[in-house]
Length: 220
Image (cartoon, rainbow, N blue to C red; front, side, top):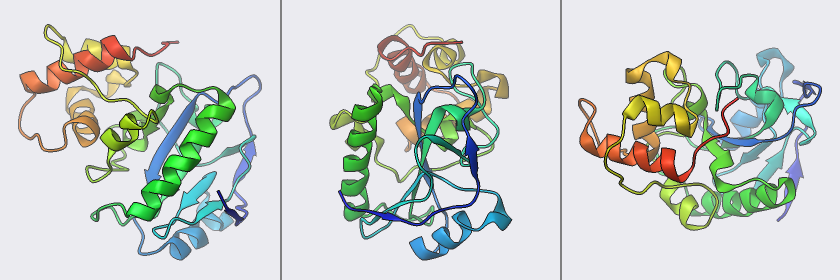
């Protein structure tokens, strides 16, 4: 996999003792990879990520993995905050309303496989920005193909299991349930039930139960 270096200026050291536990997927919500790189590499905006994958499949490295990029912001996963210190951030060149291109997805799959292998991470370590910051963030959104990643062992997909408790199971999977049911339901549906709408359904409960029982987080 060819990686093009485009160094960013906004990064720092990871918190002492922090280990890489997560990979957080974002979208840029901008018109092009070049526009996104200009923003992510400019210190004025105080944001960065480790990688950006362009629509044509080009992978750009902005921050070395041993450093703490400024991509996740406020939020938590599995009961722990400072997600930046314990994650690798990947931005995807997508405007937030379009389908993700095939070259982008292929390059992302290669990049994720490499990251998970080198850091000894399980598929459940790959999450969306909206997962760790529900109610505040919506990327990578309903157009992102999480099922495709799961089929390649690069993320997870739930079975339908009966007898679930939506919020209890959400907490067991890793969601920060203190933000409330509405925000959790929205984030969950964006990733696992994108065609659903309206109130919490039995289908939502069954899928969340499948996540909690199949892929429980190590809660702090």
